[in-house]
Amino acid sequence: MPKVRCHFFSVIMNTFKAIWYIIAMFIFQFMDALKDMRMQSLPSKSVVFGLIGFFAVIMVFFIYNLLRWWKTKICIEGDTFILERNQLSQSKTTVKLSSISTVNLQQNLFEKIFDVYTLQLDINSSVTANKTDFNLVFDDKTAFAFRDYILSYIDGKACDESILAGEVSTNSVNSKSNSEPIITFSFKEVIRHCILSFSFLGGIYAIGVVFAAIWAFCTSDKEMHQVVMPAILSLLIAVVPFLYKSLTAFLLYNNFVLEKKGDKIVVSYGLFTRKQFTLPLDKTNALVIKQPFQARFFNLCYGEIINVGMGDAAENQSPIFCLLVKPDVLQSIISQIAPQFILEEKEEKSPKSAMLPVLVKWGLWGIAFLAGFSIFYKWWIGLIILIVFLLCGILSYTTKGLKLYDNKLSITTGVFDKRTITAAYSKLQNATAEYGPISRRLGIAHGSVSILSSSANQTNSIGYFPLEKFDMISEQIISNDSIK
Image (cartoon, rainbow, N blue to C red; front, side, top):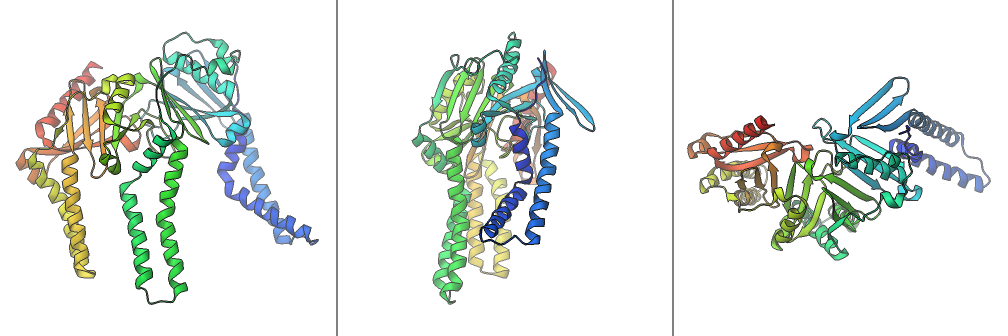
């Protein structure tokens, strides 16, 4: 295929992302200068020099991005993706198509205006697991052509060079005739997910700040104007983040659709910024089932899929493949997209002997707070904190779970929120087991396993379980490595 450049829109967006604050200052100062000119007075020298300085900085960044864009060319030759950059120092990045783990499309509000897409490519590597490897801005036809060619190669099918030559229409490339819709979520269900998945600790913090502001306002002997502004500021600090996260979550997951296309799943969602994740299922490293604290009362849970590079790089999170639903509905969806991750049996809970080391660990922190508040403030506040820590220890103990299957394991952790990760032994990189003087006498240990993933899901802790369980996990990892 001939070498192509990204869309020119990428020059504008890269410049804006790098110096948006300088562009904003230039616009505001330019508007002030126009106001002075309307009043038949010339702008001051400082304003003029400021405008010239801001404009010069903007042009430097714009020209740099323009030259970078002009000197960067992209192509696919057979089974290889190539990115060449010929600036002062020349570079050539070559990636085998078989190493690409995900091919994602994204289109924000500004990209819709210019009818362009951001094509995100990620390779199956732990080195770059926390970021997207390639962000390429193309017109819609080129973006879909690149996506379909790469996915066809990953499928092991014959790749039609005419797709990359631009001879296929956008409608045919973006066709969903082969897609099988699995589940969609209505406006009401998206709202439910946004409300019930909000951080419980964040909500407690917000409520605490509100009550503290009201208490300070009612008990203060200061004048009204000295109390009102701090109280309003405290309320804004507590309420605004809650409203912001709820609103952005709705905008993010609006019109959520999960489809299956051959041996790949396609997850798409978003109102202003439309995101579409396409994942070959054979590159799935694990599945995560999450149950926020509020959702536990309604027996609802949602699922995330773990694949290197697949997800929201800015938020450092794995993409959701299903919003909050009943557990049986979620298991039905998993059976359609990744049956190897179905949990056929009930997980094993931590033994009763594990309660002692768990409460000791949480209790030590509580005692430290009790001592601190008793010495420097009021002892009863420290006592409340101690009780809360002990309650957290009990919740942590009751939540922990572990189940070892022939080819995979599932681990459940959490205090208020509940999280269950299921991964094949072949995807585990290592396992650790730790025990102190108390747990050693009880014949139990706690530890963790790590998988190839971004930092958010790389290390997965395991609660207190018999030592034999950790020996079995280590043996499975070693046996699967030898098979490889």
